[in-house]
Image (cartoon, rainbow, N blue to C red; front, top):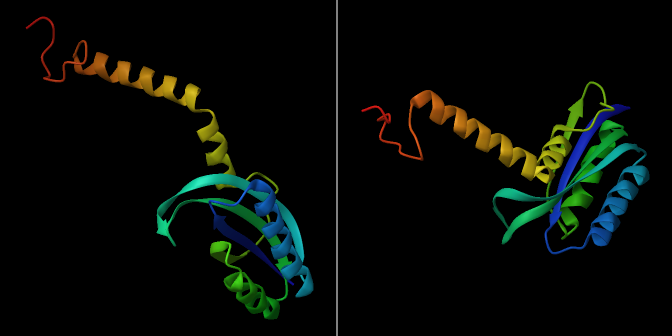
Length: 145
């Protein structure tokens, strides 16, 4: 059996409990096709790069799947038929990672926004010090001139 990563985006208007139900349905699709589901990561409600079916946000879920190659077409067909799933992507991998995915790390970073904004403020102050500007004056003139 081959290793796959499956990521899918669910409509924004569903509650977390309904997203959990969709995740359970996808897990059932995989097990019915003779596969196994390893790690499941719910990455949260994130902005989409562009609108999909009038949705600006979506619930992202990542699954590590072990399944025979013949089962993948059936799993993807059932995911296409589910109206709650906006997009999905099944990618073959060499090995499953036990660490949190990049998407999960980014969603955790967005929850730490006060700390992140203070870093941006400090960076802005350092850039102002280097350029010689004061009090938001971006003309490039220093206070000496």
